[in-house]
Length: 112
Image (cartoon, rainbow, N blue to C red; front, side, top):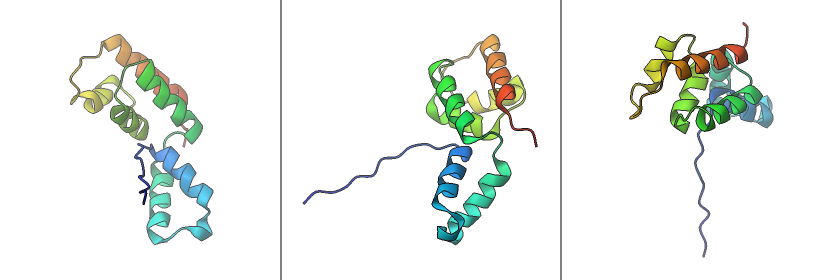
């Protein structure tokens, strides 16, 4: 008798939105519809850009995956805002790197 184990993955809001839209509105239950409504309101970047951002933040800038997901979810607009998401980390990130991250986020931000 074998058990199927489900893995966990961290998804940003744009990725959640893409998954729920792929299911189709008519196939969503009440909780999923509320979730889709929430992510539609608060998504600040499209899902393709979110995946690229997550990859760059983790691989090029050395952020943890949890930190990168939160940064993409909130898309801070200044270095001071970005520091809030990275304050709990155990490493210090240079000011130049923080500015580069903010510039990267600004290049990919959705205009609303």
